[in-house]
Length: 308
Length: 326
Image 1: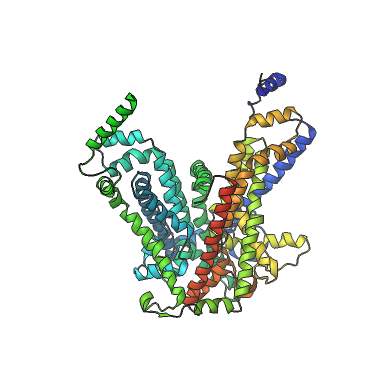
Image 2: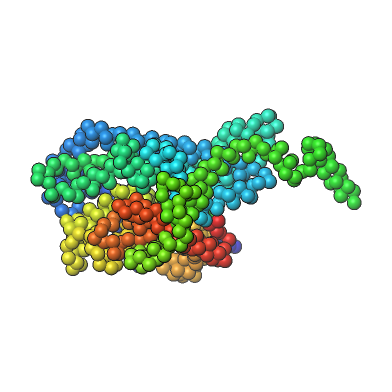
């Protein structure tokens, strides 16, 4: 009789029914309570700054300015003044469009490069190990910001949208992830397709990719989130071209100009609201989206971190 | 004997099917068979050549009095002058100290936080509750650097929520972001790192803890081991190898990542404690007094430290377990 069976017999029910060992001593219950409180604290501190911003964006400007500490509920009357002003502000709306464009561009180019690279490097060719090294070496050593800037500049991309789409659309880690994904596809399906006369592109996109799409999704979601949140590239490639600014640069700009708020003779308190509203509009779409991808992202995180 | 012969026959048969005059495994055979694959790879190769290898070549700028109008081939070579300017500058020692301090704090406190969080989460048996907490704790990870630093400067401003909390413990109300005293900025930086990364970083440990064989726990419980004991005697030892791997990986990346938040947070008032290699490079290249040569030299210096750490940590990781970064 195994230990497990004995345990089940003794307790008179399956130990697996709850997934954990039942332990109802007073000490254990106290421990549970302490854990619940600590974890509540973790969740609270994760969420409260975001809640603060959301509530501040729905407040009244002047009262908010005088308020100190957390904003748990809207200060003053609940209103949508900040959001209205944002929606009337063409340059911020353009920033929003730019961000969406940069996300789509990065994800699309990254996707194509990752799939092609992943497919080619998963095939047994003579140059395979050399090409893999060619890719992986870029993890090991990087040129850094300044030389990359010079390359982008000499390509004539500085001051154009391309500088925010192409240079960071993929990287060695994502590519290697796709290589592993393609390697995990059973070779029989590839052989069968080849027998039927399918070419490389058809095998890549129609036969293999559907079988390992969850990996591709992980790279796409990661690229998308990175592009959505990116600000540094824009600050060096399009520093003064406000028409090309993504939303994040607008936030930085608004926050910086609101810092000198006090020095103004006739302060416009709605500027303050605009800042919060833009932060909400820039942050909440991602926060709304991520629960839908959470399983894939967790999987990707667990696999990418250990094996990547 | 007969089996050997048939194996040979099969091999000969295979050879007949391959193109004439070309031996399998020869370069010609490879190009004939895989030429299309290599053609397909061209865009990928071009991407890495242009945006990763060309900048490596561009590091030669570190040895030049670089002028963008003249390019890398026309600029004057001054060899190690940029480096001596970098190393002898009065800010260099401070920059090195700040970079190391922030990297060290991220490597210790910042590293332990997700491990502890994972252990806490896995200790609680109300799965729906822990699942909710877990999902909520990921949220800060998806907040952009610009927003995170904005939030930090607001919460730590003289009327901010965290400043008020700190005042309960006897600290003066002040704008903490502008405090130039020694550990303040470093601690703020680590605090942000933990707020943003602990929940997300705990995923991998939670997954590993969930994979610990339940029989161990049941057997130990039968022998009278309490939860605390099981945590230290079973859960912790089983995820220890993973912790070591993650730590070595982190060592390799600690000099490279996470400094963009410093760039958003620091100000002339806090240059003494906040300025690090990354921000120094940035100021030299895109600030008011531009010196591309010194900027590249400082970037190269950082890159070399990063690569050295990566190689060393990779060796360590190989020693402790089979998992490696590269």
